[in-house]
Length: 149
Image (cartoon, rainbow, N blue to C red; front, top):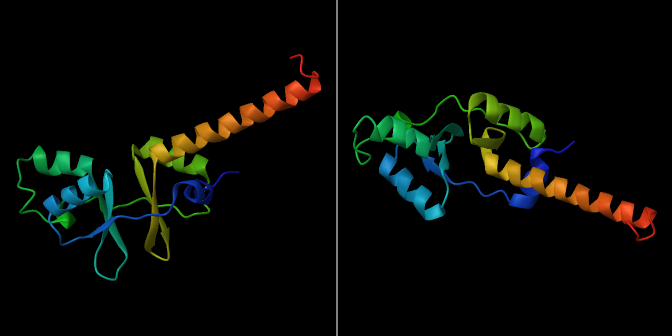
């Protein structure tokens, strides 16, 4: 069975985070600079406090005509964060994402984010695994038919 660890071994474990007290503008600027759509929110030494996404910004700031310069990340972040561990099966992650309509899942170890896995990461991993399986099957068939398949 494939796990989050397998995906992260391929993708990497970079985590971009922001303090809960920073402004939403700071968060958006960081997302743009890092070319990501979500940041893990931390609050001092307490570990993961939430996640802020472009969707949070659009729905809770833009649509409510609030100023991103005046609102703290803690006021718009998603607080009830679903997270996974490296041992979590990729199928479980896909189920969580599709049922809850999430696109980002922090990967946590001892209440500290060690990575973020996205729907795109999972899609890319599954496609690559399927492609490898197809190649292996084609090689097997080619060998079994003596190269005349």
